[in-house]
Structures are given as C-alpha cells and as structure tokens.
Length: 616
Image 1 (cartoon, rainbow, N blue to C red):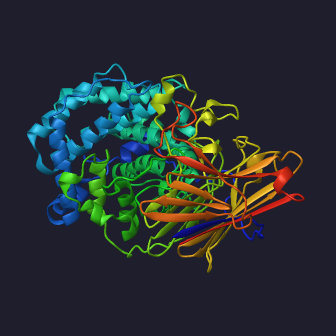
Image 2 (image 1 turned 135 degrees about the vertical axis):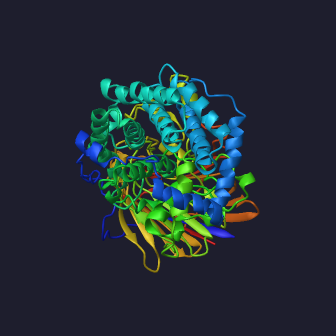
Image 3 (image 1 turned 90 degrees about the vertical axis):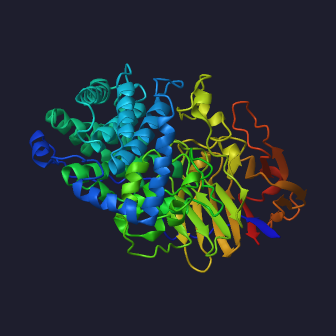
C-alpha cells in the first residue's frame, strides 16, 4: 500500500529560481548583407543539414552503422507507402492547411533521403510530382503562417537534396512558389507576419521556413535572401529567450519538440549553407533544454503534460533530442534502443526524419549520459521534477501563470506516478479545431475569456488549490521560490498572486521524505475576503472515502490519501466523467477529490496549515 499525506506549513525561503522577470534575450551576430550571401553561400548542393563532406560520411554510416541503417530501413518503408498514396490537395481543416503542409514535409524527408542514398528514379519522379502539385496551390494559406513555413521547408529541402536532378521546369515552378507564396507574404502583409518578434513557437517555426526559402533562392534573389535571413537573426532571439535561464520550455514538452525541431533545423541550415549559426546555439538555457525534454517523460512514458501538452511520447526515438546528442556527445540524449526497434513497427516517423537520420550519423559519444534524478528550472513556467534512482516514483510540480503561451490556470499543480502508474493526472490538451469550428474563442486569455471555461484550462481541472470557488487570476505568477536537493529534496511555490484579494498569502511545499514518499505542506494566511479553501486531486483511480482521507485503487495497487493535520475532516469526490461541459475533453473515469476548508468552521485566527504525506 502507498500512503498519501497532505500537509500545509510555512518554511523559510532561501533562494529564488522562478522570478518572472522576462526572457533573457541573446543578441546574435548579424553580418548578413547581399554581399555576405554572395561571398559565403556554399556553391554546391546539398546545403541543408548536409554538405558534400557530410554526405560522404552519411552514406557510409547508412551502410555500416546499426542505428543509422535500421532507421533508414524504416524510412524506406514509409517512402514506399507514400508512393501508393494520392498526391496532396489543398484541403483545409477549418482555418488551417497545416495538416497538408506537415504531410508534405514528411513526404519530402522520406523520399529525398531515399533518393540521396539510392538515386532511385521512381523516387525522383514522385518528388517531382509532389512538388508540382503543392506549388500549383493558389496559396499556402498565409493567414495561418505555420502552414506556409512548413510547406516552404518541405519544398526547399526537396530541391536541395535532389540537386540538379529535377526537371528545370519543376525547379522554376518551385522557386517561383517559394518567392510568391512564402517570402513575399512574410513581408507584404503585417497580418501574416505578426510572429516575427514574438516569444512563442511561431517565431521559431516561421523563421525556419523563411530561412529555408531564402537559402534556396539566394543565388537568384540575394537581396531578398539577405533581407529574410537578417530579419530572422534580428528577431529569433525573442523566441529563444523563452528557454532561459535553465531550459524549461514554457509551452510544455510537446511544444518543445515543435519549436525546438525547427530551431535546430535553422541552426544546421545556417551552418551548412553559410558556415555559421551566428550564435543562436548560445541562447541561455537552449542547450540545457534537452535535459528538460528527457525529464519531462515519466517512467510510464506519459509526459509531465502541463500547458497544451500531449499525453504520451512516441515509441520511436526522438530525432530532435538526437541533435543535442550529436552536439554534446551526451548519450542520455541518444535513444539507441528506440532507434533499433523493428523498422516494421516504426510507423508515423517524425516529419523531419531525414534531417534526424543525418544527426544520428553524426553522433559520437563522449559521456555516458547519467542524469540526476531530480531537476528544476526557473523562468516563465518554472517546474521541479523528482524521481528515485530506480524510476519507481515520479513527481512533477509547477508554478507559472495562465496567460503564458498555451498556458493553463495550473500554478501549484503536480502529477504523480508510482511504479509506472499515474495516480494524480493533468487533463492535458484537447483538439483545437473541434473548439474553433463552433466559434469558441480558445486563444484569448483575458480573465473573462472563453479559454478558462474549459476543464483542461481552468484551475478546477488541475491538482491545485481553489479559493472561494473562483478562477485563478489569469495573470498571477507563481514562482518556485526555493528548491533543495539535500537528504529530503523539496520545492516551494509562492501562490499568493494567483488568488488576487481572496487570500493574504499562499505557499505550497513538496518534500520527498523517502524514495517512494512525498509530502505536501501548504500554508494559507486568510483575510476578510476568504470564505473557502479547496485542495484538489484529479485521478482515474477508484476512490473509497474515509474520515480524514481516502483509499485509491488502480491496477491492483492501492494509495492512501490522508489529511494528517485534520484526521476527521471529510473529503468529497466529484465525478468529471462526463465533464462539466459538452465541449470539455472526456477522460474515462476522471474524478476530483476535494478537501474543502471553511473559514467560519475550520480556521482559527488567520492561518490555515494543512499537512499531507505520500509514501509507499
């Protein structure tokens, strides 16, 4: 039996790691002029990710390296599947063409990789047909510019990795499309290029696609190429600043994969085509973010899925993480066993798998890759992650605020696993289009906005605290004010600003008491506005209530939740299956355990302390 105890106390704060002082902006070098482009652009293709010297090593590794060879066989399998599919059409899903653009990027990665290795004319003909099809679309949907960026990356990669093998007419059509459908819209309409100096994944993805197009057109249009790449180097630091100071990506692990994938493509394109990344790699926290990615995956394979994050990682190896492995030599970032899975089982390869295969071929181990069990990082969405050496337990806790990119009202929340079983969950993300098609305003984050009606977004759907039954203050920032990594590792979160005027102060502390045990210590200083304080625990387990606690049962295991400081206090179970709104995400068996304290009944003076412990 595993035991969960709940406690609230105040402990002194010794150091702060989560202040919300804004991103640290690195000023990269920016020598780009038309003359610089003409003098430094590599004269031969391939220029993207590969060059002639790297290509020789790559082709040799495809034959000799077990990991590279195995993944290449999976790529060949997917290339054959692509050939049997119809050509892409301009099929919109709501306001997005993104699904088509992503299919094109996947197709060009697998087809162009096979062409590089085998020079197969059937593959070349299919690349030609695919390019002809998408380049004759009326546009690439600049109103949702991610669609343009991913399509531009796909078309540019195909032209680069096929060299001069494609018909001249196809090359001309494709280059005209990159000019007219990608680069010009990125300059001519402010409604389409709002992303250029933003601090989110759009900045990373869109600049990457435009850099790819610029390099592809650089020989014919050096002025436009110079203007595009110079703009990117000026504004990419706004997106890169979100990794500071320690590598936590505020949008969560899924969006780390998205934004970081395109950033490492940008870095490698610039290095291979122009000989430098101009300092992007040195952005504070960027290289450290690989450890954030690793630690965001629990032993069960589920993510610490805060923000609009997916639930579970792919069974395939992580190609973006492999880029960090080849840059650092750290074997912890190179998922050998996953890359050696049976190619027949490696379906749905990442759409940048061709570039990923190059990175696999470049990896040379330097360190064994041992990572500490406990990890924390500050910044806009600070987190602390604790696990034991044998991966039996996993606890992820967080601060932050709702108005971050893809943010939720989840400050003070946590997820917890024991022996690969997720006991306390985050409800995760839900389909954007399903909400948008009914007119739901998902992307506005004012205090009264639609977003906070959703259980996945508001505080009622997270393992946090609710005061007076109110929403959290959307812009209230919760810092992780103290982290200790001594005998009993701990993290303290200051939640005061999240509750506006409903409390005078609020702090929550998580403590690992033993390898399979932790405590939650919360302290509230109430004021005249305080009426009720509710601690919330979301679970899919069966729940049996008892005085001062509950017994949770799941997969033949039990967990005892007990309010150590209030042994007779009664808990309440609220079913969230079905959820409160028809538009909420439905999660089978989801329920919330509420522990509610009333000021008039449960609080003497102005201080409430509730003590909780979880042990196995």
